Image (cartoon, rainbow, N blue to C red; front, top):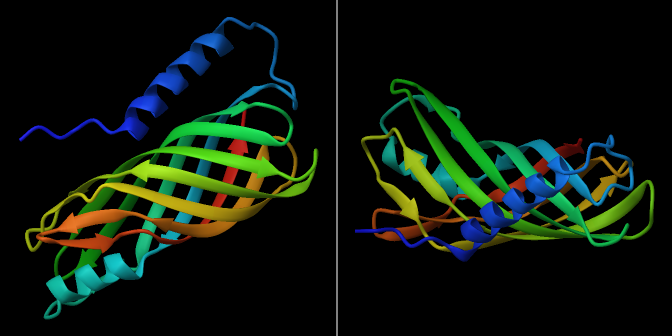
Length: 194
């Protein structure tokens, strides 16, 4: 069965490609007020839903590492003005389970987020995102596939135009067998732009 290409994935790839081409045409070094930033981030996602799936699937095993995800992020921030930006990007959420059994689970997550910053320079901001996850598992106890479009929101602090930290929640539906579970959760993330 063919998997449908989601609007979020297609929009992220298209906007990222256009931004890279536009950035390549400009030979000047990036400034703090540059309308295009390449954004990288790292975060932790505490996921009770994911932990429940592992606990149910491996209840007679001793395992560790099932409390959440390491979240690595890359994207292109397109600034409409100093206060409003849109970022198409891709996250890679990964988790290693070790103990009586060892395996890795991961989710490739195309995202499209929007940020509203309250003032120039150091400032609080709010951010919302839509996403579509492509999960995979190394487990032989359960199967995973995309559960559809997810969403998230966060509140953060921008130290300057290039670096920030935020705290929020991401809803990430994943089909585990016949049930849909939330593999998202509380997200703490640090981002920086170049």
